[in-house]
Length: 433
Image (tube, rainbow, N blue to C red; front, side):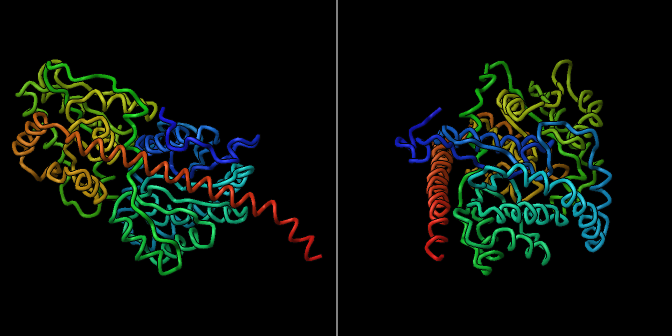
């Protein structure tokens, strides 16, 4: 790994106490994209500051990667069809109890001995029925009680905040302890400015999602072999698209027929499809549901179905084996870009559209069940021929590394200042007496 950003470690890194940093996110979500971005941020921070200790605090209280045993489909369906007042009442009742009994005591213990906190990565500033507002407000209350310096790094911000959610986010990030704030694209920066800056919260700069660095930390599993195109087809359950992606009025049946037609048309060209999901139980269940139809759409050996990846690195290695990716999930698309693999993003959420525009690939977006299959196949043919702009890729990866290095510099400064203040506190008390 590259250790060139800070050739002279800060004074505290040369002392016996190695600073401990808590990274707050949803690393252990069954959707392995969340773990991927967390692991990339961890690896890059350690490459810059090898002396620090990083401890992850998962906002759901998880402590390891687990595929989960229950699909969220029934819950998402119920929430999608319920009025907001009902959804909020359910969330505050169920989540409020969990926060009080389990999560806050767990976080309080996890923060013992921590020197600084980084709220790092993912679409965390989103108000899907108060989930993240309630969790971030609770964990940051524990952080503030300890007076820990805090950063927000590379998060996504959605413009779906209710008045209650906005008040919780403002309370979570208000106060003097926030030493760094950054978001993963300009749209998120604008929402942060509109929603949080009037409360006196520092503005957020724009950085690249740390998931862009995956190709620097996980070796590619397969290089193109010239034996025909391997196309990765990533599936997402339609109910997740409805609940999180706004108003996309394409029926589940139409989507299923479209996927089969896409696979059939690609197999006619000799392509081989690898069908996969990012790991959430409902997506894996959807893959199993469509498996017979998709298998029948291709010739013998032309359609395979990847087992669920156990870790983010496994997911990255799978995606790195493709010649072309087609998928909804943001971090599947980010991973492909990191490895220089062209992708066609399936439209569902503005964050994916924003990412593709950010890396010069706005034209590589299509709508499942709405766009003509032949036009998508034609786009795929062009992408297999053109690939990813190498200069753009190199620029984005270099900038992403520099952004983490900037965070590391801000972190060392904040921790040193916090420790100096702590050392001076007893002296001030004695002087007053």
